[in-house]
Length: 464
Ligand SMILES: C[S@@+](CC[C@H](N)C(=O)[O-])C[C@H]1O[C@@H](n2cnc3c(N)ncnc32)[C@H](O)[C@@H]1O
Image (spheres, rainbow, N blue to C red):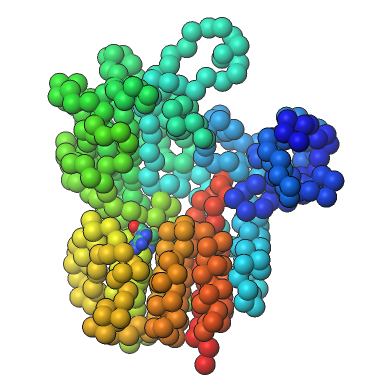
């Protein structure tokens, strides 16, 4: 089947991971970057006995639900892949994904899934962006065919599935204007001054990566990662940024000579301002350091946490476990409504941040522990801490380890509030918890407009 072209295929619906679905001679065909209602010719890129995958090579009829993508990088850049679908429909597809996963995998009776909570901002909603410098800019087909010479240095995002190719970003609709100005000014300064951009194959070049973090309090953190130790040029770059953008509240840099861009194990140098920014929620302050996780859509994180708190139904008397607590944001957020909150997380630096955040906010009823959940949540831990009345759990995409699920079954907390960024693994875990729990409420929340990602919160109550 590979390379065969199927003509006039009608795209029917969206399935998991944002793939669109059509049928051909009884077989499912998954197609990328189209919309339900489109009629397209598809070239098959992969053929299996039960399904096929393909790419649309010609669109005969556009779906009436399509909207004009707003970004000039749409289709090339890996982000914001659903710009061509109107926001109302994006939300209904996301809710449908949750329904499908729970009906397919959940095995429990599924209550009516609540309408998804939409994001007030559908553009400029991210508080963190990560740009890569590269001397290997992605060229479009027209640029290659023109035979002209183009600037090959770039600062922007990776092309999907191409680790070494970067789309040079002119304007990104995910983060406010200052972010666009900082990125473009730094790229122009580097080009004018002959400062080298990183070569991912050769592993050399000074400018490697740029991270911009913002908060709703107006604070801005800029982190520049350098791939070589060139003190004079580093000074020049950092002086340029501090002089041009005095409003930055935190200007940091890292000299990262490792093979990859991760910097959890690297020293961070403060060039200007503080080494953290402050986020605020209901009068609580959250310090966010360069290595700390914080939900990337701050306004919507508040909506998500309110749902979790409402489902927990706290009266001030409860012991709450906040599993996979990150920097303790949920734990600190619910602390004043609980008797005690215990947060567990495996990144030690995050647990240190969680403790600082509790202290800064004068919260004295929180305890935080660092360690792998499946090892931490053992009989000894349970014996030396009060039993939970409510468990809030917010694991990574892979969901919870089976040992953790089994421990939750053993703990028999009256309520479990399960927050997840992956309804498939959430539904799998909920099916296991179904041995003792009933699925009461299912509430999807949209944290990432213009993408297929969906966050989902469920409330489980212990069978009497
Ligand atoms: C989706 S984040 C939740 C963050 C937090 N609840 C919040 O809203 O900011 C998942 C967290 O689980 C942590 N984590 C991942 N695997 C873990 C494990 N095996 N044991 C403990 N924590 C883990 C990650 O470091 C991350 O902070």
